[in-house]
Structures are given as structure tokens and as C-alpha cells.
Amino acid sequence: MNRATRRTALAVTLCSLTLALAACGSGDDGAEASPTKGDDITVGLLLPEKANSRYEKFDYPIIKKKVAALTDGKGKVVYANAEQDADVQSGQLQKMVDEKVDVLMVDAVDSHAIASGVRKAKKAGIPVIAYDRLAEGPIDAYVSFDNEEVGQVQGRALADKLDGDKSQKIVMMNGAVTDPNAAQFKSAALSELKDKVTIAKTYDTKDWKPANARANMMAAISSIGVDNIAGVYSANDGMAGGIISALKAAGATKLPPITGQDAELDAVQRVLAGEQFMSVYKPYPEEAEAAAEIAVARVRGYGIEFDSLTPDRVASPTDKSIPASLVQVTSLTRDTIESTVIEDGIYSPEEICTAKYRAACEDLGIK
Image 1: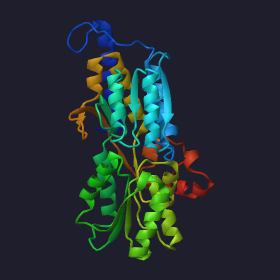
Image 2 (image 1 turned 180 degrees about the horizontal axis):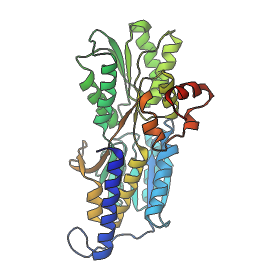
Image 3 (image 1 turned 60 degrees about the vertical axis):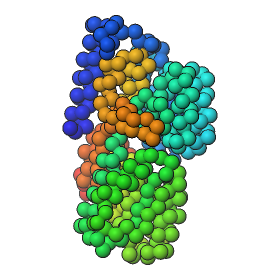
């Protein structure tokens, strides 16, 4: 099912559910519905960092807008960003519990460290939705992209680009060990890369920071030799930028294929220019809107709607069979820029095709 079909199906389902709930007033057990809240909902939103531009540019404003739309403008979002500090995020969560928000959406800096805060929220009667990263503790639902698919798309793209030549050496730059998503990306990518290329060096990058990825890459170059690196698996776009910086500093005359994830504007432009081989486009509006719908349905007590919005199941180290919504992703290459980020309105041609990239845009017919 493609993204457009999935969105249409979800819209029809929600419309049907809304009409059914309004018409018969029934909950999932056939009894009269008793929503715990009306439209005056307060959603606490905790996001992990600002280094990745998506959180401030897409996630927060989309969630805020969707909550308002679902509550006739009466619902609100209280937002805090931890800027990659797990202790700060724990304090932000406690503050929102103390302020008695109706539901929490948490994108954890550290999925294990946040578990005690999740338990405190649940004890206070506040549902917790894990957003983008699977948090430990008694969460009510999980909304993210299909992380295994992300890693598979990245690994397959790189293996195909290198024609599955086992003699070719690659560097594997994984994400932070505190992020459970990073482990899923890594495992899925390895399933596509193993026996097809030689993984000469592999790193887990602290805090996902581009500067740390750059330092790791410089170490890899020193060990392997810049001309002996046939490709780089980079788990996201920010790190890809640090990797490219290291390769250029080391005098690389031609950049090897480098993967990424998130379709950040800088990365899209690098893909356009041929500096970065590919990224993974994750439709943030679909993820953010789904999370807002799930949060509102959960706090209102609409079991039927909540169940329809969480058709998948995932397991964390602390809980099994967690209701989930896993959004599909798409490979972004030079040939798919127009059909992904431009078609979905993430970036306009004007944002992408600045003076530096205008010729490349004209070459692809992007106007």
C-alpha cells in the first residue's frame, strides 16, 4: 500500500468511526461511550533534540496543528525539547506530570532512562505515547516509522550500488546506543550488507552527533586509507554530513556512495549534487498526525478509534504486544526527489534549488 492509499484508507476509517461514535454513542464493549475528556485536552510533547531540524520544523508544528483540528481549536500542546540531555528530559516529564497534562507524547533521548518517568506518569493516570523512538516502561502506544524497513532500504541501496562485490570495503556509521531505533536500523542494514561487502570498520556514534561521526570517520580513514573506502553506511543525514566533511578533509577526489536518513534539506541538496548517494524519506506529516490522533483518542477513551489507529504490535525490553502504528518509508535518490519531498510539500523547488543547485535541478527537470 503506497502512502497516498494508506492516507485515504486512514481518513475513511476515521470518518466512519467518528460518524459511528456520534450516531450510536457506543464504546468498544457496546456500552455507552464515556469519554474521559472533551475538546479541552492538554497534550504534553517531549522531543529529544534540535540538531536534527525535523523536530522543530515538522513534528512539533504538525502535532500542534492536528491537535487543534481534532479538538475544534480547544486542545493545546505543551512542548519541551531536551536538546539531547536525558536528565533534562526527565525533569521536563516530571514538570508535565505535576502540571497534570492529559496525555504525554515522548520521543526519548534515552529509552531506558525515561522508563521511571513513564511509570510516574502512569501512576498519575496520564497515558504515555512513545513517539518516534520506543521508550521503556508501561507506554500505551508507539508511533514511528518501520525501523527495520529503514535499515533494509539503506543497506540494500548501498549493496546494490556496489554490485554486491565482497572485496569492497565499507565503513558502517551507526546511531547512538541509547536509541533503540539505532539498533533496529543497524540490524536490518546488516541483513542486506552481510556477505555482499566487507565491513572494514563499524562505529556506534554517541548522541548521533555529526561531529562525532566526523571524528569516527577520520579514524576509519587513518586505518583503511581514504582511497580504499568503497562506501559508507551512515544511519542518518546529519552524520552523513560529518562523514563527507571528513572525506573531503582527507583529500578524497571522489566521494564514495554514502547513505542517510531523514531527508533533511541539506541532505536532499547533497543527493541532488551527487555528494550523498541516498537518504530515506520518512513522511513526517503522516507520523505526526497519526500520533496526535492516537493521543486524542486515548485520552477521550474511544477504544474503537484507538484500536483502529494502532493496527501493529511491537515489544520493548519491559513490555510485550504494545499497540503501534508503523509508517512506511521511501528511498530518496536523485530520481525520487520530486515524487517524495516535493510532492508531499516538505520542501518547495525554490527551497531546494538555490543558486548552488540550480543547474542540477534543471538537469532533473525540477522547477
